[in-house]
Image 1 (cartoon, one colour):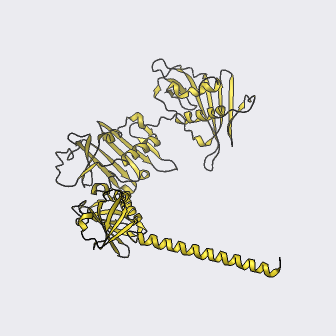
Image 2 (cartoon, one colour):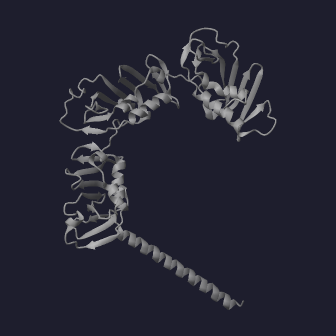
Length: 455
């Protein structure tokens, strides 16, 4: 090919590429322009909205919601003062900002036929720059697949997908924050709970990476059990509010027999007074100690807070971090099984396997480690001979070293059944107590010694 022909080919390809780029760029610009023109509101960032106003037949009392405080949380400021549910507000804003106009009807003669003379709902957004955008929401079309919207002057009717109404259909109750107590679980220093005739007091000691809790009158508490209780409290949701006109004495809230109190970091205190039953409903009356509305919560929600001391006291037999487990040794009646954990999981070292390790043989040591980490005693057994000297079975778990923790070994000695309680006797070195555990909690030990047993 001659040089001139080659140059012409290169120029032609460059021209074609340039034409494609220009065409594609124009198409993208055109698509963006069409999308912008079809938007119900010009705002695209919900974070830019500082005020949301709701009215119309859906809100006989106009509702105003504003962003407040440094965290920009939503607050209802009219017709009452109350925290707003940020997710519910976000759904309203997202639905409106995502709405696209499918068709426009110019200068409608009778807005009433679209439900826009007395709109079902009106929405107004104000952004950080003070720009205010208002939209009227009317009826669904006869086919129920479109929703009628309009600007405040009703110069046009906009037809949008009917799904938009689902995003906007929120009541004042929907928009309220229904969290009964707002607090950070990790910030709780003390919990007092008086429920169903039982008083529980939990206190936290600071220091170290892990929380240390004490159950008053019982001793160390299980941090995971305490955390679960705190999350249950944090998850309480109001099913209804009574904002005014209530009689605390009639609701059992003037001198409540039940309640809970939290002390947070820096001495901040929160609390709930728990009152009587809501007539003919499975609900109880509650009120925050600092005042505010009376709330109704599900009776079952409060029952889930009930705890026995045994539910909260630290009952783990071994303080075993599963992630650190690197070795496992079991001894029984002259037999010894040794397992090591590597990159491919657990492998039996002694006696050496005859062939390739099967998947279920890898899983059994891992399952036993889970069982040991979760092993809890049911009761402390009285002094006696439980077949622990010498122990019928001994388990040792090797823990690998970490940056702030050296390598260590944990041991568990397993004896026989306590005939009085039906519990299995176990013990640990250095602890004079004999723990009674459920026999089925250590059934995987037998499965390791006898592979024919179930895992």
